[in-house]
Amino acid sequence: MTITIEMVSRIIDWIKDYFKKNSFSKGVVLGMSGGKDSMIVAKLFADAIGKEKVFGIIMPNGEMKDKSDAERTCNLLGIKYTIINIQSAYNEILQQTKIALNECNIDKITTAISNNIPPRLRMTILYSVASGLNYLVANTSNLSEASVGYTTKWGDNVGDISPIANFTKTEVCEIGLLLGLPKELVLKAPSDGLCGKTDEDNMKLKYANLDKYIRTGELNEDIDQILKMHKSSEHKRTGVISFEPNLKNIFKK
Image 1: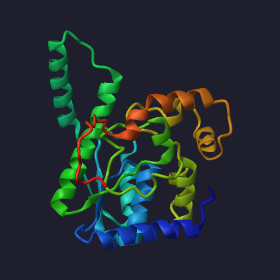
Image 2: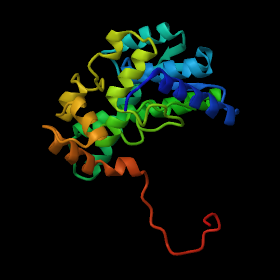
Image 3: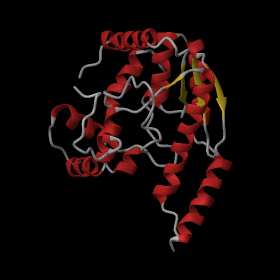
Image 4: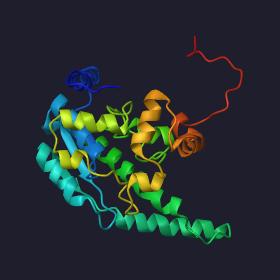
């Protein structure tokens, strides 16, 4: 997909229209990670509904590698923001998880457990603040991450409105550049901010190869890893799976 200034304008108009239809919502709150996705989404909302209606929350877990970039982004966009350190809540949940697992004779906390707690904590904070402000929560996920499940279920992959969900990481960068955002921030290597590695290191594939496959179906050196991750993460894209008995449902025509 070729990203043009007209496409960017359509995204902004879509956001404007959504808020007109949902006039109960006074603004939007989103987590500011210091990465490109949150910066670009914040800019889209600032242009669509006004920067005074966009509230950013920076949520380090103790130390945060990209904290300065997150603050720089908020100041650059002119949006209000606050910093909430989740370390004490994280430590308490981790401790209680250990106690629960010990009851089942398991004494090991896996990397998946420790890495997935922070995104879910952050989403809890976003929804708590949004409820108090009567705001919506912005989702900052993109198509590339969703396609291979590089996201935390019920964490960074949820929200009320998601302007970049159907765009690849490459396309999101193009949107950022067309919005006039700093090139060094738009093109910096993506990182989850959890383990000190880049996204590509963690996924063991290149975004360029993933994005090309998504749009063209053309095979490349990363195809085995792409298909493996896509298959194993299906549950993240389908939500809750429930049994449906063959009974009458008055809501279904």
